[in-house]
Length: 195
Image (cartoon, rainbow, N blue to C red; front, side):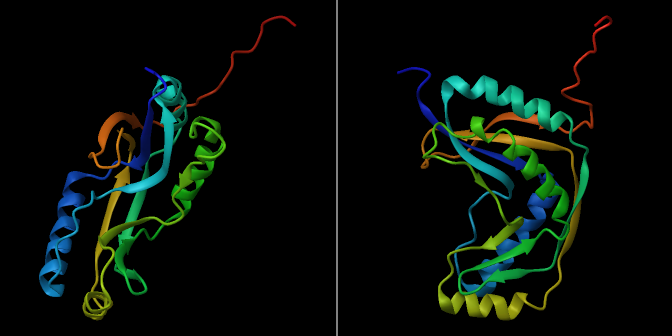
């Protein structure tokens, strides 16, 4: 039925193209060194991933827009490499506190981030850009031996979020909406003149 179709969404920080390209180069070098296929996933910093029906998308966009417009742009710093033992190597966000505050803000509207109680939203607990995932043991050992001592630094001003959407998990993500952080007061109600 139209309007009741289910879509998958993710809200991510907008990462500048120059940083995406830098991470793609590092991924490519890693693939060469470890003799694995280069990571094909997007260079994104997710905040929340959820499912919702099409008929609620407009209300969802409005609520997200109201919230994100009130956020102040902030500096995101990426530093060095870390690993999840035996399978993944990534570049962590060094200053996670502001991202965590924004995730707490998003939790206040989580009733809009799920179609029902069985499909809860997934709020990203970790903030990182993946270099490689699902590595076999040999590739992980070789890669971590090489990258545990390497340095990487990058930073950017997070000034927008992207709402990504797809109907089917086999399809690529599409940008449904861009929300700018403008540090504007939101949710202020005008007082009455006379009581």
